[in-house]
Image (tube, rainbow, N blue to C red; front, side, top):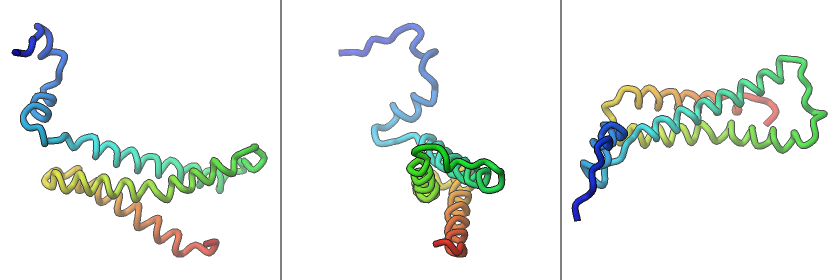
Length: 126
């Protein structure tokens, strides 16, 4: 049974859809992997910025009820986000090694992971 083609179907569907999804059933678009890695790094940077803001400003959040669990979750996110970003960037790099943005993103994720590891290794409170 032939598929019904509507008059505005080509206008509403992006050309990228045709190349990626209809050329081969096994081919996958790698842009979501790269975007997920960027989001992981952005969340990591936002959490560390929040920690630095609390450290170097007179804001005292210890009075807020239930803030301990929220801060513990933020610390866990700050620890796991570079790992997730490195894994996602590595997968995107393995799938498209010639895309320079994948190399840049993988380098940034590795730098965040190594920097955070060094920070935790040299800190005295651990």
